[in-house]
Amino acid sequence: MNFAVFIVSSRLFLLAAIILLLFIYFRIKFFKLKIHFINFKEKNVFRTRRELNGIIHFHSTYSDGSGKMETLIETAKKLKADFLVSSDHNTLKPKSDGLEGYYGGLLYFAGEEINTEFGHLLAVGIKSGIKRGKYKDVLSDIKKQNGISVICHPYNWWTPWKNFGVKGYDGIEIINLDSQWRGMNPLYIPAVILTYGINPFYALHFLAHKPKKTIKFWDSAQKHKSMKTGIASIDAHSNVKITKKRRIKFPKYEELFSVARTHVFLSDKPSGNLEKDKKSVTEALRDGKCYFSFDLFGMPEGFYFNALYAGKYYLSGDTVNIAVSGAGKNTDDAGKNIDKKDKNVIIYAGININPKKNPFFINLFRNGEKIFHSKNAGLIYEIRAAESKTVSGSKENIAVPSFYRVEIDLYFGRKKITYLYSNNIEIYAPIN
Image 1 (cartoon, rainbow, N blue to C red):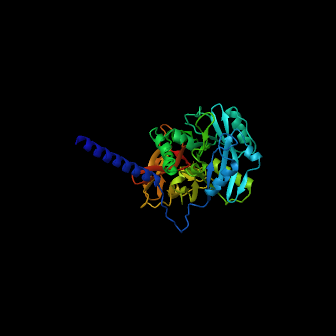
Image 2 (cartoon, rainbow, N blue to C red):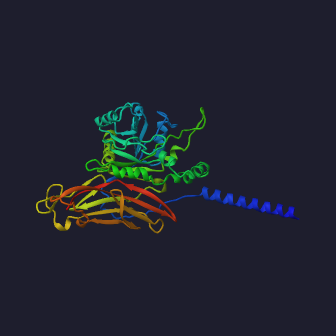
Image 3 (cartoon, rainbow, N blue to C red):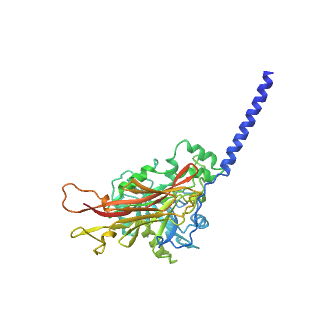
């Protein structure tokens, strides 16, 4: 009798285990997180520039990647990227091989990831290859070519950046997908490996976590007249070593190209001319006229981040220079007196997310500290004279820089994801 009960119990347990495994399988198989946007027909007064979305930093067979450049260009074109920037190690051969150019609506040009004694430096917008070497020499070569320099994966445990006090670089990779998976909770890594074959989206959505150390470094690096641009980089290789002779193409380029992108704002629409548009994208990145986001949840629609001062709108990368002249009179950048009622700066930010489907918060940061937020609506924040601090013993007005940026936190039920990061607007203002 006991044996029969044991047999029945075992079968019931096995059946329950099978049902549970099937439930987990189908939950993973059909897992999808999608942002719902609202389509506004009226013109947004803040969005006066042309926005392009781009895929930056990946490796091909020109270095240690598994994909041919021609194939990867077609992949990015299929995924509706507007621009594509490769970064093979210590070579600019894709350019010398004549691969740069327009492919339909996709602009492709080659960058280079260069080894220095402090770590890897990404060069974008350069004309000729740069040899690995001392940081100051590599940086000098990039500047001579009017390119921009970006510190790669600063906290990657495999190849970290080793000198956070260096000067002269233009930007930092805030999101780097190689660092994202290396820096995720170790408990998630088996989940990524086991579920990738069932549903790549489920596996890759774990990459969308906030790189707190890198953001702290980014905030601390902001200086007056030397703001550092933040970007998202793919750092795709699709070339995982299993044994000495065997490698697998994991994760696939097509899937990684969809995870995170950098969006630039151009003053004019692309001309279709390679060199001109390459220069425009490079300058937008250098000037911080960009933001970055985890686009695997949905391509951002309608995002804006601006500051209004004395009737003029500023965007990320700009400095709002509130000078003081005479007996406490405010002047604009041209030295023209500003009416007292217009001396305050108003910051605006927003995005076309449907809050009924996806509740969201727009968080405003000043010098790395969160100071304000809006829930399920656009953000409006006034920087008033009362916020200025007094320097003890000082008889003169002293101008100090403050750096403002926004992050957008998004909710899928109880799951929270920091979806989007802007670059900084500097408010260079007097303290009394």
